[in-house]
Amino acid sequence: MDGAAIATARKPVDTPGERRAWGQVIFSRQGAAIGYGAAALLLLLGWFLRDLSPINAGEGVGYALGIIGGSLMLVLLLYSMRKRVRFLRRFGATKYWFRIHMMLGIVGPLLILYHCNFNVGSLNSQVALYCTLLVAASGIVGRYLYAQIHLGLYGRKASLRQLTEQLKNSNEQLTTSHGLIRDVRQTLVALGDEAAEPPATFAQSIVHPVVMGLRTRWWFYRLNWAVRKELTARAMTSEVVEQHRDRLLATTREFLDEHLTRIRRVAQFGFYERLFAWWHIVHVPFFLMMVLSGIVHVLAVHMY
Image 1 (cartoon, one colour):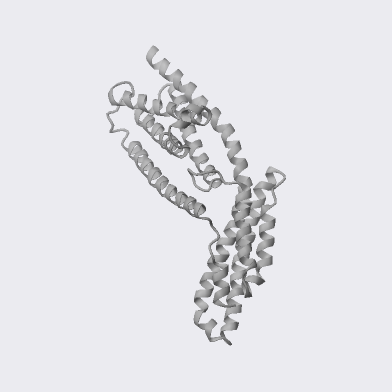
Image 2: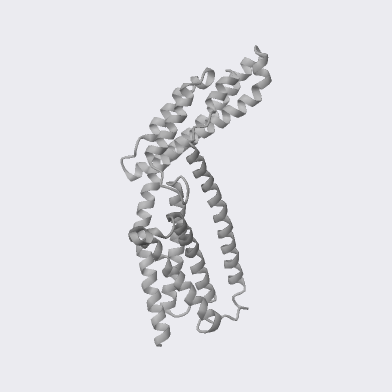
């Protein structure tokens, strides 16, 4: 096994578009972490200081927070309308609408919690509050599932064909390599073919990614051990291999990790896609319940 073989095997197979998409994923996760952290901090402050807060839900700042928070939750409808009304598609890309949709889905419930000073009142107030929190929690779950089936959180949707094509390109790098990398090719290709088999049932779609995750991690350590053993043996007879052994080990380890990660993504795709479809079916009724309970709450407050 020589340096040329490793260099050939480690040539990047991602397209420029894919590299940019993964950059967007990293950026969006960092931004989401900051946003969720700030929301959690405000949530904790509001909860622990609720007995000291002068906010009254029926007047002044408390009343204004309720109006603003409720209005922001209604604005969430614009994202769904944006996807269905052709006229609205002129106003910005979908990714920006989605960002605003996610942001308002956190800010709105937070303002409503401050509006009620983290206390539940009458029955209609409780129903409206719980429905709002249910929609917010559902949105966080949906964001996670959405990220699993998109190359970028705000980017275009990934397809199983695209992921499989990426895996195929990675396999082609193995085909053109030599030495020890070529020797493990059959194992990696077999794992990739098995991962690409679509599960027939929902139960299989749950078991399949779990099994493939365990198997790919097992093969990662097993193949790395084989590479280390082979390089150690060759280093005893080759001064060049001995000189570059650590670098070759690190490069091979990185290559195997990237390749096996692709295999896991292919295996997980079908499971997350089904979950996201089911989540969407549940999320819409939750949102309608929130709107209806909010209208009842507003009417009850102003009529009685």
